[in-house]
Image 1 (cartoon, rainbow, N blue to C red):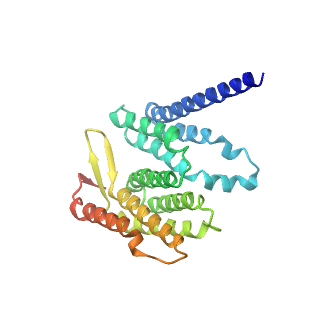
Image 2: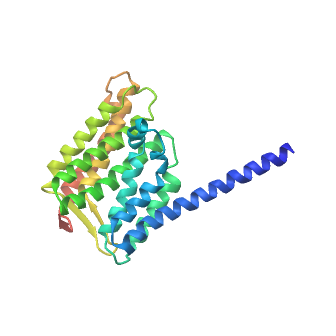
Image 3: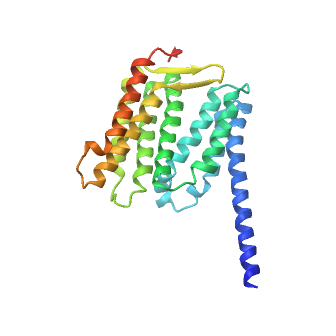
Length: 262
């Protein structure tokens, strides 16, 4: 009887896992293509929020905490929808890439909980969120870009810091990074470069690359300082810093003649 019970329980767990994966794939594909077919981002946003129903199924006191805890996932989901909307109502290769990318995020990247994967998730939010925010900010208003970058910087930093058991309060460092993101976005807006790959229908703002590389470097420096009781040791982070500086220099100096300017 005990062996039968264990078998049944394992079967149910396996079935639940398969269903969960299928539903996530349907969410990733559906939220992108329904945006294209409807020509509106509203339905796509609604599907992303609907998938986060657990975030709202709590007492009002915990709503704000749940929102902050799910901010990176929301940034990524909304970004995929916005990029699908911006790419137009005619089905292009980029729409299939976005659908596949969102499905991969939901099924492979998002469920991971290790320190390395947490950083990867945060960097995904920075890159995708900034890509969507840059195009929106260029077509609407620079203030929108600044505000969105503050949220992206805050959410990505908090996502990484919240996994750190040694952090008593991740609020101030996260707010600081959010402010830095907003300042960089404000400075970059007037000369923002966007690289266009017309055959794929993909656009990549230079700001998205800059902030992603900067976030990686900032996280490595923070880990080093934390691991040495507040002492900064350049030799421990020399490689990430040198790598980041070289990448930024190549992008800013060597690739600042874009396909088009925003």
